[in-house]
Image 1 (cartoon, helix red, strand yellow):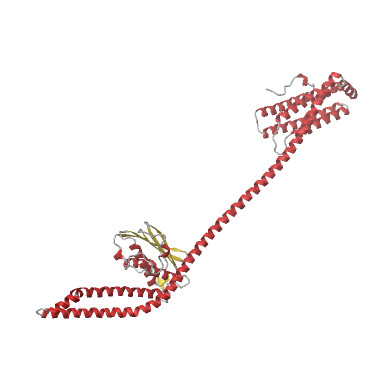
Image 2 (cartoon, rainbow, N blue to C red):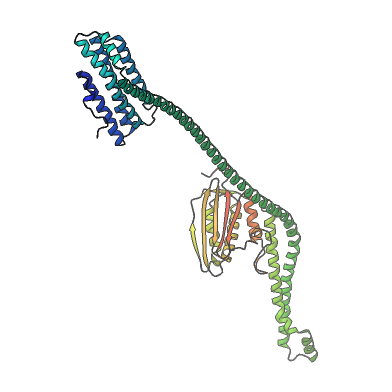
Length: 494
């Protein structure tokens, strides 16, 4: 359905004028159709731009026509003013800077203005042109039209239409001004919101960065605290070992000589007892019968019991003294951990295999699983490192009396190598874990351990500027990891 239908009231009799009026009607109807179909602003703007250009062309044609015919200049000036005002109003009503098109309001203005324009000033133009073409004077024709407009009915109609047009124009101006201010406010608010958004995003990024920095610093601090605690533990352990080393050196020296004398004397006593036993045996074989007083002496002195018990007592004493001697020897070795010994480049995987072979007699039902990596040669006191590995392997095997799995691993960590000895045994209780490297600390039954094995291992590794790390879960097993520096500052073997 057309918004603006052509009828004979709009007919002026001027061919070009009527044809272009029909063209304006068609463009207005196209805008109405696009608006009804809810077409986008781009499509509406394209047709509106076409309508404005078409109207301006039409206005030029009318102005040329009036001059060619010779219309009164006063009328031409009024007509041109109306044309310019229309163009100004439409330009103000067209959306600016990407704003939405108020098509409905614009259509009402266009339809109202075009009806007023055609029925009013364009019909007056057509009548003046016809009078001039029939020989009338331009001034007379203009005055006649001016007097005709003074007719009360015509004047009222034109005044009402002009008043309506003026109201529409004022509304257009007010609306355009409001739109301009609104767009400015929206643009300002948009900029403020964008600035606030950017500030908020910047604040969020700064806070996230601060949080990350804080987390990193906390982690670094926790690591430093853990390292400090570890170093404190190592320092305490080192002080213990240093003090004990001095004590052990003195004790070993003071005990070793008398123990050696006692062991040697017990050997002589055992030999003397053997000779006495032989003498008694010979005497008893060659005597027909022992006199009563001899029998009484045998009975009182319990000679038979002495003969049976003397040698076992000597053997037990010698065994006990041998243990004392072993402990003294371990004390001497402990006190000499830092002494200069031969350093050489050693294959620690080979050392681990050798230590495992040494402990093979205690393997029983234990399964061994190896995962040894290629290691660089390590500069160390290889005999002492072998002693460390034997001690750790011995503890692992003793933790699995009913069998289990022994896992051996090795690897490289920067300028260090590491060796893992893990068992699936009974594990170490958390309350005794801090004490396992203390000298003379042992959980073994009395007489089966002296508590020096792990202490000596710790001291040897410490002397190599390495460390031993322990992790254990009761009922699941224990892992001992030995770290040793490769000592890359020393020349490598070719």
